[in-house]
Amino acid sequence: MLLKRIIQLFILIAGGVIGYLYFPDLAALAGFDSPQWLIPYFGLLLGAIILFLISFWLVDYIVDFLKLIEEKLVKAPVADLLFGSLGLIFGLIIAFLVNIYLQGFEIVLLSEVLPIFTTFIMGYLGFQVGFKRRNEFVGLLTINRKSEKEELEGVKASSDGNVKPKILDTSVIIDGRIADICETQFLEGSIIIPHFVLEELQHIADSSDVLKRNRGRRGLDILNRLQKEVPVDVQMYEGDFEEIQEVDSKLVKLTKLLDGILVTNDFNLNKVSEFQNVTVLNINDLANAVKPVVLPGEEMFVQVIKVGKEDKQGVAYLDDGTMIVVEDGKGHIGEQVEVIVTSVLQTSAGRMIFAKPKHNGKQASTGS
Image 1 (tube, rainbow, N blue to C red):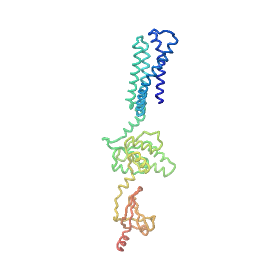
Image 2: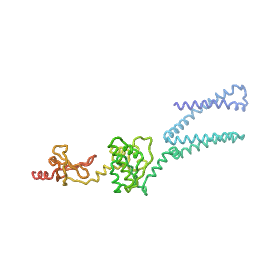
Image 3: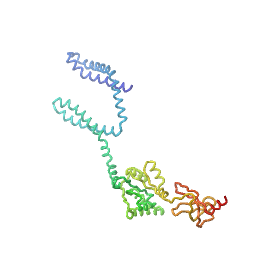
Image 4: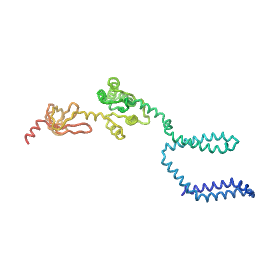
């Protein structure tokens, strides 16, 4: 209702202004030329009344039209509105400059009519250019990101374009097993080393803490091995994401932009990446997957080396580091014992095998 009243008020004022300006000329043509001072005010009143009466019929159409425009504008993307409006403004500015030149002609068609036509045409063309070429304008405004994207494209490997690049994080480089995996040629495509990961490794290698310093230097040694000894395509990504502080977040963003695969053994980074729909290769998962399969009832020789957590338990390890909990193995510490596997437990930390000495198993079966 408020919009309707505002439109009616506008029409009323417009009618009064039109009557005030043009009614004296109409009155002069009709022969009504006295009193001169009253005619403009009579025209103001007459024009206001006429257009106000017309507004009762016209206002509903205007309100419906404005609401339709409002719905279209609300639903339109912000980029469309922004660049369409900028194009319209630019077109109107050009029309204004052209009209200044046209108004210098004494011909009425050029000085009065053509400027109106020019304003409409230039405004329309400006809006259309801004609206339809918005993607290119966005590209010009994000030229730094464009160059960043070109660099990303430059590090994408494989001749057929189907093999995704592998982006290494700091933890998997320090771990060192990635070099052995690459040497076996199980990983296809390029290996990408981001510059911000290299900086983090250098920072760790310069740490005052001896353990951190050794880990950082190990990571740098692994990088040198990847570049010089391992038959794999290693590339450096020199770009950075200055608006992001954490290295893990930078890795996730880079992997998305490259449409690549993040290689890590960091549990938290693994979960964050999966949450953001980033493909992850976890070295620990790979190590667990390639461990020898052990089934319940299988027999093996192990050396019990220490006491387990529970009473009478002993602990042994396979060559790959898999822990074996031996029931009644406490009395066999330091001995080579033949055991029978009773169950296998797979956890996030790895695999755990439960077994019992074979001679105890025989005794149990004999006793039964």
